[in-house]
Length: 114
Image 1 (tube, rainbow, N blue to C red):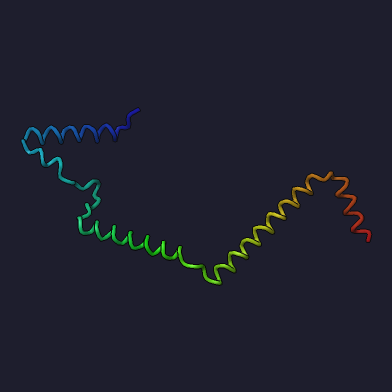
Image 2 (image 1 turned 30 degrees about the vertical axis):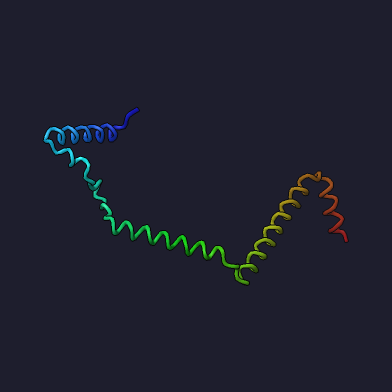
């Protein structure tokens, strides 16, 4: 249903709109206000933040376009080998579980006797 906070906020907005229309100063309702103590960003500051984000995105795109270094390629190769090794281990475990237990025990006995 309705939360009490939502209802209170709605009632507060209605009161504000009634007061501004009754005073004849309806422009006050259109002015930006601070909500819960949060600062309102000025336009120059907002432009500066947006410009910084745009520059950061450009740098990330340029880095993505560059050819990877030798170290990065070697690390990727190593990571790929490790993943293949882990997958092979998982396959072997699954295959071992599929083999009946008496066959596994028999194989283990043969290994210990030699």
